[in-house]
Length: 382
Image (cartoon, rainbow, N blue to C red; front, side, top):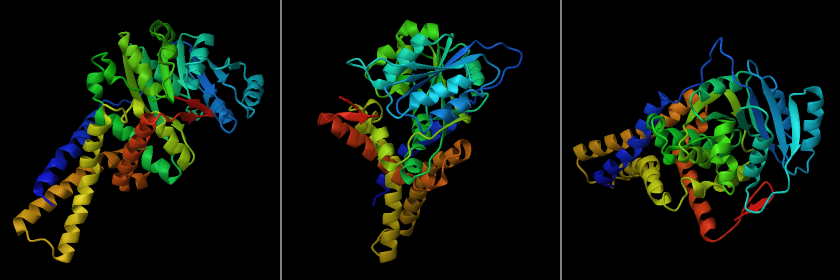
């Protein structure tokens, strides 16, 4: 193993780590404002076969305080009794309303169509799109309304609940990628579309700006509303922002390995797995997050078996650079465990997590090239 390879890995590890640390200072938790009257909010929940969790989602939303709100659930052709559960809860709380989505038109993604239908029946000037697997704290909505301020769209990243191995290995990488590759300070000083980011689990927007830029009707086919919707707003000249709502909301997005894999793969080609990005991103992540561990293992193997003929100073330098690489790669994961309450096991197995992430991206791109359809919620998409 050469010192040149170890030195090549170091900047690849340093880049996301430095940006991650810098971004932590900008990645705000939405604050409280006393003595101000917030605008009324429509909490909008698209739901397709969510019988297992829709009651818990609604019970959490109706605890919302300090802001006038309604809750609208758009039943999108559920066959598991989701609508009956919502109707029963609506009988006990008049702020809850059930709407039914019309049949999915050709050329639409199911979630985007349901969200567009929700926006059109909402009665309040602030629209808050929340996935059915998100559980809100009582002050989440009002604090995000305050955070909206002079923005047109804001999004919060909830705490990700992870219980199975693939969940705690892959889902914490949401923060690693977000904070390690998006310059938040620059994002806030420009409306450049390429800097738009959001979490599809929680998006809040002003209704007039939403309809002005087309809202979900402008991203009909996407599987990645968290990326495409803020970029659509920015293309129209509107400001967008992101917030840390780890303490204000939680979400268990997937519940088993197949859901994690297929869920991340379904929109990978719109993100890191895009044809123009996948090679440089793969090289950067492999060299910075995986290769240092391989280098270290190879060095140990050489020393244990007496294969190394290098002099002491060279070996010391090689070990030092390699160990530094590893420490630098671990820093964002350690900070993620502390700040976002991520599972420590995923942090310990970081290089394996990155390997799995890259595998998902290449798998998704291969399926795209081969013309395979993407199936989600019992619907197939090109």
